[in-house]
Image 1 (cartoon, rainbow, N blue to C red):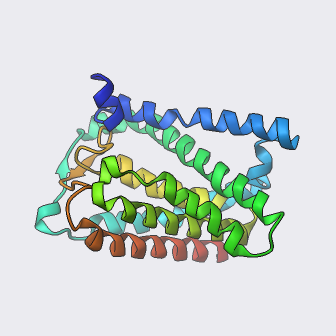
Image 2 (image 1 turned 180 degrees about the horizontal axis):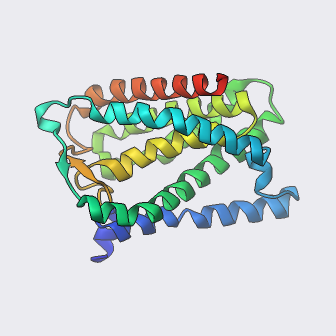
Length: 242
């Protein structure tokens, strides 16, 4: 940890772990709201524990090869991967990092798909409401013009689309298992395997020279990211049918 700027930007392994682990407080706050307002616990957001766990593991088993394949696809010369952490150092941090990514993705899934989606579904029949509103909010919280500049809208739009796919998996299965598998696998590869240099790259095995505020980047990256997300959603759907 080398100071506030390092922490905010996630430039070191410890800084990234701190940023991810902070989501535990969101889980604790949600637990208090559930207990005080709804008289139920966090487990009620997840669904049957055994079913959710099996679905999470099955979807993750299918999604990992897909994301590995996407990572190994040829990149344009200007976006070639560069080594970041040494393999030995990366493996040393990996167990803690996986746990922290699980906390971060679990917190977001419990809030947006577990809580908001279920509360809205209990009051409204239309999926445009109980899928659309939480997904729009999910996109909105990813709107970050300080990080992405004029491309912030594209980041928010992709996050909203990702939210729709996660919400669909939750509605189809009745548990958070598949949505969490999708979110967890995506973030493992986006944070721990390959990350854009200078942006939450402190614990990545590789980085690539991509400035999120690069002019015109949205028109190049957004269609690719949406296509990748669609492939991941279809893969999870296939996994659930096996």
